[in-house]
Length: 391
Image (cartoon, rainbow, N blue to C red; front, side, top):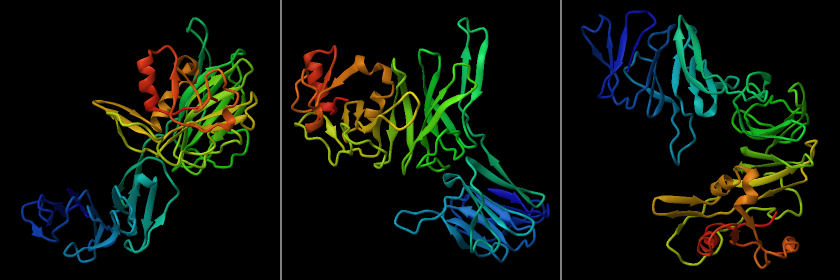
């Protein structure tokens, strides 16, 4: 790790022994300064006072006020069991002596005018890669946020009928598309953008640190949004599959890490399982997994309040040999493509026969599932892997 001081003459190096060295004659001779600067990734010299030197190392951001002889920690790195710190990726100092820290994990840049004693966050930026001081000014490197797009081609694929973006100023993604009988496209995905285009006010808007799922419907010529709404909660939500029925109703599925994801009354799974499903002894190892939860939501053709919204998830994780099936995320994968659901499996509540599904709302749920078109032995294996219910 090395840097040239703003005066264009003094060279600073941190060697393999974690020692800071300084040369004022182009590297012919070296002065040994502070030691034990382990895992160093950055050095910054104050242009207004060369005695102020900052080093970014494994302990955090270190500051020296005596030209690098001694250092004190001004921004400690996060450590388990300790006071939360800032995970700094790069540092820079401008011509006034202000210190800048980039923290990509928080999508944030911090600035200090008092040598790191206090840090002020600047307006949030997404995907901050690093900082660099040039000519007394500090520049930030960012990645360009992704923006979803939709393109409609004519039947011969030789002409673009329309092409449009659909997103905000932060990173968004498109995960699914379905087209109704009128040629109107229904889109679903995720957004980090507080300014994502919506046609109705949402209760839990997206932010650079929390994504929401979105559902939007485009007119057949791509010139107008019939509706655009968010599926949000206190934690991240991502919509990953969409389907449209003959009436124009929209079905969306995906995953969320939020237990307060909005659920409608009277649905098959209004709350998350509190414990893993009971099961008989087998060769599978079972580990609870409650990190992500699958959901299914039905919207009316105009995209207004959901007709229903339910969790559809479990808390099992299974492993057998080199293969793996997981609950939580596993449920999300099985629900990834809604249009395939009827051909894959059907759900049966505990204690209800396959011909008496009307009573499902009053029955308890348990780990049981019937798969269509599979052998009896395979069905038996599947019953041990996931629980499910009729929707």
